[in-house]
Image 1 (cartoon, rainbow, N blue to C red):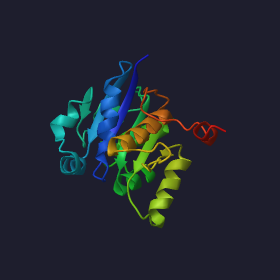
Image 2 (tube, rainbow, N blue to C red; image 1 turned 90 degrees about the vertical axis):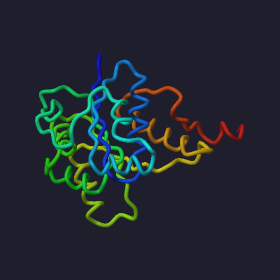
Image 3 (spheres, rainbow, N blue to C red; image 1 turned 135 degrees about the vertical axis):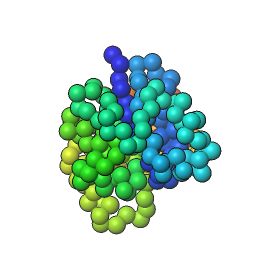
Amino acid sequence: MLKRVIIAITGATGCIYGVRLLQVLAELPEVETHLILSPAGVITAEHETGFDKKAISVLADVCHRHKDFGASISSGSFPIHSMVVAPCSMNTLGSIAHGLDNNLISRAASVTLKERRTLVLLPRETPLHLVHLRNMTIVTEMGGIISPPVPSFYQHPVNIEDIVNQTVGRTLDSLGIEAPNLVQRWEGLSRKTGQ
């Protein structure tokens, strides 16, 4: 059964998470990706990765304009499986938390929440002040999943790709989508020490 997954990339640092998600999902024939790139996301992506708008867009099955309120994904009657905002800026987080629906990213997220579908946000900001934390609480109370891209070091990453893949794999876990060989699973200390 086809799973439609919305990937939104905003202007926060860490656009590589959204790009890598698109790359991984492109290899899964049962998944159809719908991309929304914010204008700030385009700028950040070019700066951080060298990927321009076209290079990112070709990774998705369907691309939507940031302000296209008439897009299929702006309606709950259009069946989607889940949505990920990676990375999620604090501006986008606030818009989602307060139901502003002021662009297609926040509108699609609002639809995802109201239809009780899976919404995962990868917020990128540190340190966090009280409004950031409260907005995360609001989204969580509405059923969203807040999943900051915090690296795990038990896998002994040797490069940025290892760190990114672990976060992307764990994000896909939240969606119930399996991507083989992406996540190094914790097997307990006894396996490592031979006890």
